[in-house]
Length: 109
Image (cartoon, rainbow, N blue to C red; front, side, top):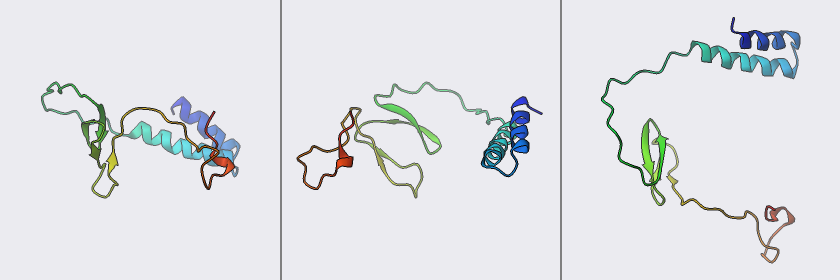
């Protein structure tokens, strides 16, 4: 047995009937699945260098795509459409003078 599996199994057995045991048993299932998972399929297609992406390369559904600000994509036909926004930053919250503001909306420090 894998040493990690043995340690987690010992935790599950030692703390049987507790939250710790439930967590250990869940982790044990994950570890067992990871050890029996088949290796990824190797592609026989020729590898062609991709053109340089001017945005961000990401896996969308089962394909690798270049996502640019203003573009959109869906992970699956039933999934919501996602819009790519430009990189940047903002301060979450609202100003003290905003109508309807509550104290929980203070900007992050």
